[in-house]
Amino acid sequence: MPLEVLTVPCLADNYAYVVKGPDGVCLIDAPEAGPIIDALEEKGWKPGVLMITHHHHDHVGGVEELREKYGLKVMGPKAEEGKLPPLDMGLTEGMNGGGGEGYTVPIDVPGHTLGHMAFHFPNAGALFTADSLMALGCGRVFEGTMEQMHDSLQKLAALPPETMVYSGHEYTTGNAKFALTIDPDNTALHERVKKVAAQREAGEPTAQVSLAEELATNPFLRTSDAGIRATLAMKDASDAEVFAEIRRRKDAF
Image (cartoon, rainbow, N blue to C red; front, side, top):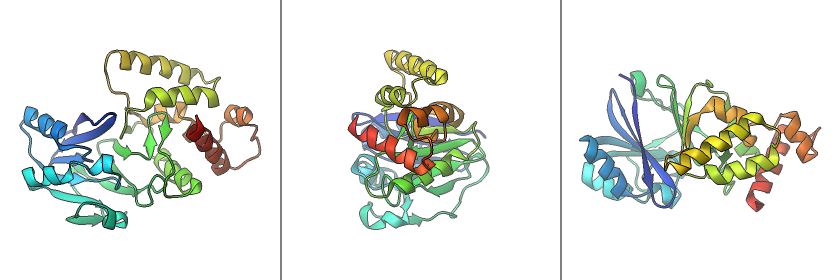
């Protein structure tokens, strides 16, 4: 049974995801309860599990209301247990679960927060990254170090390129404008920027994209690219140093 993934816009620019697989229905992040409940009721689905990626309020604001309504089991990174709503299960890397297309692998991706997790469904080719890897960007480095964030993104970049990446915010338009300042000669990036503009014009979400497309166009994954290094005048720097410079420029953009 293939996974069915619903993209649920929440708050001003967040996404939650409803994932239906062979073991039932799970939610990934809960920025607010209302839109998630509406999406579930439209499908006639009842979720059994909610998996939280990190502790920021715009990813957990709806947890208690959803727990009360559905009696679901709440899981999230054990490293952030003290900052999260009460967890039924604290997750660490290696605590894989589920079966078939619903087989789930939690991945530690510190940087944005110290305990941030991504959730990989390898048999279904799906990756839920929240505020780690984002469409044409990455999350700000609030709690971790630049090196940690770079390492986290490299870990995700090593997954199969056909993997679909589902990230946590509709930031792609702004990320695209910035990416063009870092990677101005990238034809694939120019094509993607046009596509993103058309998608947004049509009211479509753009934070759901193949890893292959990210590898070809996201400057935060392209730190070894000679053109980017020339633009930054960092020909001999390490990949982590190039990443840090790109992130610093994005913070000030």
